[in-house]
Image 1 (cartoon, rainbow, N blue to C red):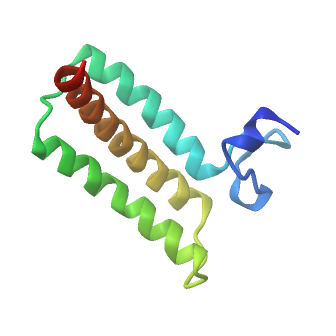
Image 2: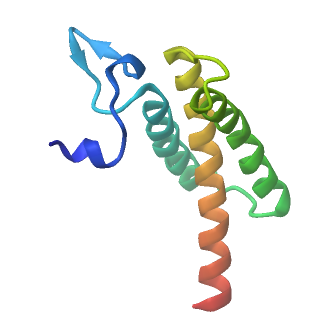
Length: 111
């Protein structure tokens, strides 16, 4: 059992392969991690105003990922790895924006 088994389902049909080896996480999680790390770096270089608008943008960026994931979960359709990657990239930015706003709110209001 790998440490990656705890952070992703790692199903081979939903993962990318490079030179015959499976990525350590699925296509959607790959997108989440790439864009999440990139967003954290960019937010530190170019600060984002923490406002209701930023929170709404974060939520809107998560919607495509939720639609893709739930329509696949309920077997309404089958997604593909490129779409999973794209929705993961959008979702990664959205979740980091939401986390940043929540951290900012709790740090400045309760600590």
